[in-house]
Length: 20
Image (cartoon, rainbow, N blue to C red; front, side):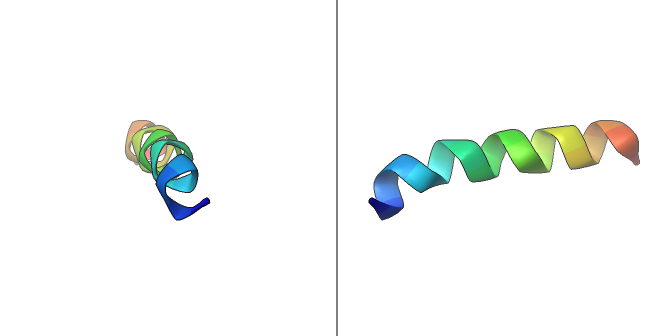
């Protein structure tokens, strides 16, 4: 479950980086 969550976290960080 945690392994499947990691990709989503990376995408979230990418989106956050785009905002900043």
